[in-house]
Amino acid sequence: MTLSRLPLSYCTNVHPGRTVAEVINGLTTYSAEVQRQLDFPMAAGLWLSASVVSELTEDSDQLEQLAQVLWQHDLCCYTLNTFPYGDFHSERVKEQVYLPDWASFERINYTEQCAAILGQLLPEGGEGSLSTVPLGGRMNPRDGDFHAVCFSHLIRLAKYLHQLFETTGRRIRLGLEPEPMCEMSGTAEWTLPVFERLFAQAEALGCEPLIREYIGVCYDVCHQAVEFEDVAESIEQFVQRGIRINKVHITNAVELLNPSENAAGRQALRQFVEPRYLHQTYARFPDGRIEQRLDLTLKDIQREPADEFMLAGSWRVHFHVPIFAETLGALTTTRKDLASALRKAATLTYAPHLEVETYTWPVMPGETANDSLPLADRIAQELRSAAELLGEASDA
Image 1 (cartoon, rainbow, N blue to C red):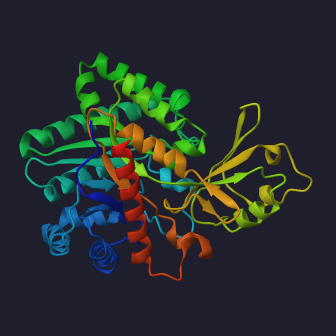
Image 2 (image 1 turned 120 degrees about the vertical axis):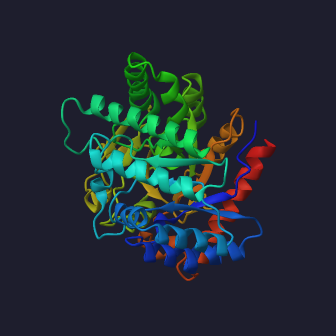
């Protein structure tokens, strides 16, 4: 029972990556500088948009150049973020980040191409992982047979990944990443039933063991903490159902305590309202009831007189904030939940890949973002904080 001994990964979706040139610029400008500042090795968790994947697939020289840049800067890569398909840095991403969903051919084709690329970046005998959308977002339209089509595509992918292993010796697994208000969100209510139906469809086709080997979860701690889950219990539920956690996103969410009476906290939270990303907001009431709203809005924060949502005991917002922070002025964070999740992950009989994914630096309020420091310095601080949490989890 141990945590992964691979270099701690940092997801590059914090940097624009519309072309191979932009991806390489992010690595040389930021990732290489972060690695220089650390006294432990770091991995680059690459985000490769569909346009970048097309470049790399069509031109082997481009992939060789990318591999050379990683090698030159002492960066390995064993995991890809294949969740955002398009431009993750456009003016408005919001619910479009879940498109194309797993019912589309674009999603399965893109994911297979990403697996092939990662297979060429991994060392001989290496194991890799891909994180991906939780089938789709419940706020987006879908057809009646949506789940069955998604499952057929996931089964196809599992077979592809197995074939890739047999031909290259490199085993790559997929992690479906539950996220608030998506087809897979809360563990017991949404995610476990989806896996049960996936396993049933696979069993009918005689390939359930293959699915269990290659299709699992990317456990993003921020996402589950936003829904007020007991994250250790949530991870145990996956263990009990035989669902493999292939990757853990080391992430932290923002929290507003006692919103109706916390004027300073409401004022601070106003700064987190921004137009690019979706910030699902959950409220927990003293009786344990939980309500939700699709996005954080100024209207909700400034509502006078206070509505029922405002009278909750606390709000948690899907906004990734620095993992080193337990408080952000008048706001708190879910860092204690993160520590709990890592302690639980340390008890698993296998070692999920570990990745810090604070992608929100470009839209974070200035004081919270500590933007007086260069971005590479802030990322290095994140990784040092993650390493400290992992060390504490290993010793617990």
